[in-house]
Image (cartoon, rainbow, N blue to C red; front, side, top):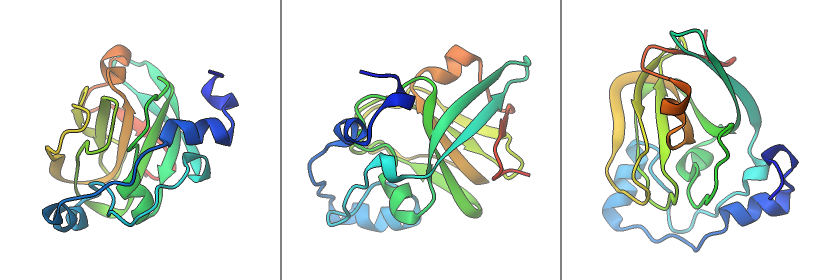
Length: 175
């Protein structure tokens, strides 16, 4: 498969192909509180249509890692996230930006690959990392601390790059 930057929209569609999800009724109530999946009648948007941006993570050790990210900038895109994606390159991810800081939680329903989930405060400080999350799990993963954004990366990427809580994420969403 070509490098992620050379993937065509058709190739991105193949990465996100999935069946129509059916959620139990309790999940719809939970999904209104946090971006946890999609309703049964919500279509999945092609990732090629998501806005794209770049984030840089600066570690306490002085290393910098840059990622190309899809930006989940609407409620529908935040509910979708990386569900049904079957491959995520190491240099790519998804950034969920909240309009205002708030506690946030995610689950892995319909997410087929392990992810590292980084919760980021309004100044770009990583406050919590869940590493190598369990695919297809319904366990909520979150923080009570208000966060401005959440960054999802390929599972194991945080450990591989030495990213820890307290490190800084650089993006225009942070002051």
